[in-house]
Amino acid sequence: MTRLILSAFFIAFAAGAQAAPYPLGTMTCDDIGKFASEAMQWRKDGMTRDQAMAELENRSYNDPVEKKNLIAVAGMVFGGYGRNWTVETAGNVMRNDCLKGR
Image 1: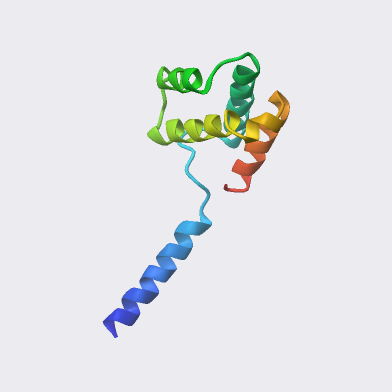
Image 2 (image 1 turned 120 degrees about the horizontal axis):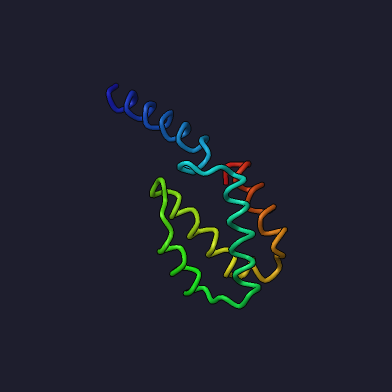
């Protein structure tokens, strides 16, 4: 009986955790979109991935999760996705993904 109760609790907890959007710290989805456009401009200007990551290391953050999110966004911009994006579309895609909780 105890196993059944613990299993039900775990399933309920896991389902609730998956339904919430990822944490943004003090950033908004618009902030994520603006950063994606900024990072895409870096790429268009010839900045390398390593230079972009160094730039992120020099930034100050209000919450540690913000750095994690910006590194992930920069990774997409400087990865395969960025080959097909413009400055504008990078911001739109990342803002929309954020709004959808991805």
